[in-house]
Image (tube, rainbow, N blue to C red):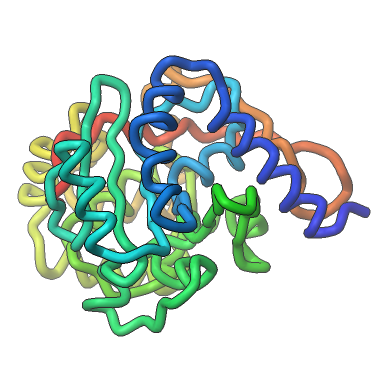
Length: 285
């Protein structure tokens, strides 16, 4: 039986291999963004990029966006931001966009969850408690080539359970739309807290408002296929034997995960399409 430490090592090696790939976009990101930040302090990659390597492997993982947190002084991070001509983002960090990727980065002490959400964050590992979605609660340290995640993390992905990890958020509407899109794209089931979040969101925003915001924020729209929130929830419940159909399935392959969280050493296939994380138009939702 594979131990969790072995699985963690497998993921870390995959991320390290991805970061050191000869892909021109990855090389540019590494040389121009990651390495300068590493001179300040420990750099952590949080969420999406590591999550998608876990779910899909590295061969087909596109370089689209990356979230970095640096255990260093805010002033030093701000100096690097000026060098990169990075723009302040609304969450206390900085963002830089190239033709191939979008990178957002923060000093650990200026992350939104610490400055506004009330979380005690003093170490890179503490970032596991700071992500809105449970599937994003995974952190890779470039200094130690170590991946951190909670005990239930892999099982939640294996069971396609999407849940709220940290409920405080700077963007209720943005996370509502992300949740609706991810449940469709990833063929996921909402956990109890996320289901309650969706129902409360529907009471604040009309379906037309949701569709308009998705149109403004994303090049590809997923939600227009549903007449209204009730129709969405009907499909979510699989009434009439229906469940969400894969969205733009022709754009995606079926990938095998490099590990199996049950520990039996076999891989398992994820049949949901990858959310196209690189097509978001705005940083503001």
